[in-house]
Length: 459
Image (cartoon, rainbow, N blue to C red; front, side, top):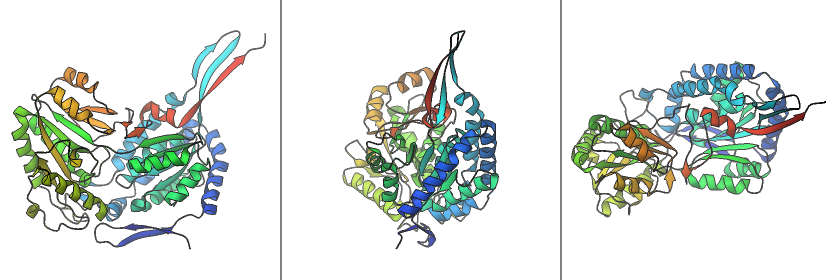
């Protein structure tokens, strides 16, 4: 009997959807269909591929019922809408730069030689998308991969399995061939087996560090190109000259939005001593204004975490920090209905880097705040992490931010903002956050390979 892949709603434990995982034969057939369709897709004019992808994105964005469906699958409150604004922004940018990014690099064309470098599609791309932003994370690779001439298999997390089906349906209705873009239901082992069998030219995975290691093990010896966006423990640093109100509003939103389940969410905050007390007071007042509840209720500002086990991890980290001397500043009584996947927000002071809360990813609505005496201490603490996705600096001095940012071990440096992907900038990380590049012109380089032409002309 086939293994079932199930989406259980964090709202009430109800079954949202279930699908039979592909057998080895079914997975192999999907790969074969995609490979067979890819050459004809790549042979289409670039402008035609761009137009079809843009039409698919427009069709997806028009599916208004995706918002409550997403809330039922993973718990984000409906009041925040869906992800389609970001999907259109990212796909639109990648479409706008495709011609330039994929253009041949002309080296020379003289009386003796023509020399140039072309960008060739990998062929078949596997996109393994997470549940926390299932459309946004997927479109980062799906859109440019298709535009570059690849066929794509899209494997979504079980928690948001309907998102992959919805995305593929929209693209197919817009005219992208069904075999060129296929949603697939695969177990972890089934995924690993396909990678080990060299089914793909490129694999993009967004998820946990352990998941990334499993992908690398499966790909070992196959020379399959990989893009990995893994864990994060993103810091914010509020300097003594910062706009305190803006820093508190933005960083706390960056820590708590989507119940803290954001790849580049803020998980630790360092505040210059002169602002520390006022920053903490403001942060607590912001959090106390949240409302925990059913995400289908428009008044809810904080929904459940995607699974009870995720909430339990955050509870354990918080309890361990408090036992080690940290102080929890938010009264749990302000957030009735906690339990299971429902977890109220929390702010802790008295924390340090001996605590998992400040070192290990929690991916939940809790943040620790530490007082620092200056840039050097803040830099040491920000770099004291196994991860490196983003860092958020708050100051009125852009030169200071640039100097400090150059010394932070991270993929992106923000000044006076956080928790945002600019599609014109490369989305990347370092250390255990992973490797590779998405978005920007460099995103096309990851999804293609260079081919050099050295043509000697007849004399």
